[in-house]
Amino acid sequence: MDNRSDKTCDTVPATCSDSDHPDTAGGLSDPVKTLEVPSMSDKMFSRFSDFVQKELGIKMPEAKKIMLQARLQKRLRKTGITTFEDYYNYVFSPRGREAELASMIDAVTTNKTDFFREPQHFDYLFYTVLPELASRNMKAVPHSQELSRSQGHGVSSSPSNTASEPRSVPLKIWSAGCASGEEAYTLAMVMSEFASRYPGFSFSILATDISTSALKKGTAGIYSHERIEPIPMPLRKKYLLRSKDQSKELVRMIPELRASVRFQRLNLMDKLFPIRNTMDIIFFRNVLIYFDRPTQESVLNRICQHLDPEGYMFLGHSETLSGLDVPLIPIITAVYRKSF
Ligand SMILES: C[S@@+](CC[C@H](N)C(=O)[O-])C[C@H]1O[C@@H](n2cnc3c(N)ncnc32)[C@H](O)[C@@H]1O
Image (cartoon, rainbow, N blue to C red; front, side):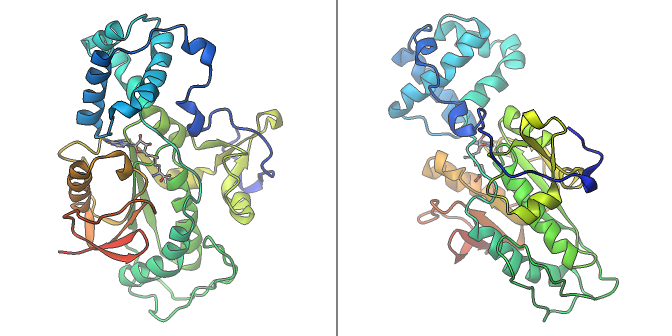
């Protein structure tokens, strides 16, 4: 990959297939190989599922046994261990905790994501949330300015602001449960588009997840042509670099975009998060669905401690807060503001 000549490099239309898609990464891809390792006893299922529920917060009812078995069978094959009992003893031994636990966690998490997933959120962010927060953070920018709505996804062609020397307070965004980084880079592109119209506007993005392999992909910022299909072409041209080796059909986020996102491992089940900043915006989408209601409530309350009093929280469209005691007020579908 060429990460130096970004301004002269362009992307090509998406045409390739993606053998590493998160949808299929943890699934039953090879039934013949699946038969080579033993099935999981109820006793072993209960031991593994207890760990997954208590340590990761992820619901693991009996109905998920086949899925958990299939995902862990891959780890047995990879480590050459022949029984689930031996694998369990290994993974929680001092050596296994160092050498295998992270891979086991990678295997049991579902890292499905996309660029511009649930795209209405990014339009709302660009046209409503950012102008409001920018005018609050940048005193020299007039409140009445209008953004051009020439295209969706925050892609517009006419700069609307000529204010000079605005005071810049960087906007802080957190993509919590970021998987392989598509959500964080979507945010980075939208924020960069906004920044190009608002002199002095700056931002930083924190992207966290429990899965080390997903974080590694995010940090690399390399994606297949198939994965980038949801990205509008003007943004692809501006923010992606194609591989020098055309046979690879890969693209990489430009260095400036990668520099704006910091990937960090964080378990949302931890009682304290190692986060010093208060966030203006938190994207916490499609993670809650994996937790039971009490876990949803406690995780959300902890996350809200890191949200600015006037900050915004974006959840997944299928996630609901009804019945949860959390300091959030609904604004539009799956968008909330902090309340006291
Ligand atoms: C389905 S993905 C959502 C990705 C992205 N937010 C989106 O909406 O496209 C859910 C992510 O939550 C992460 N996750 C699950 N439990 C977690 C935990 N206890 N702490 C941190 N991340 C967790 C998984 O590793 C996975 O990458």
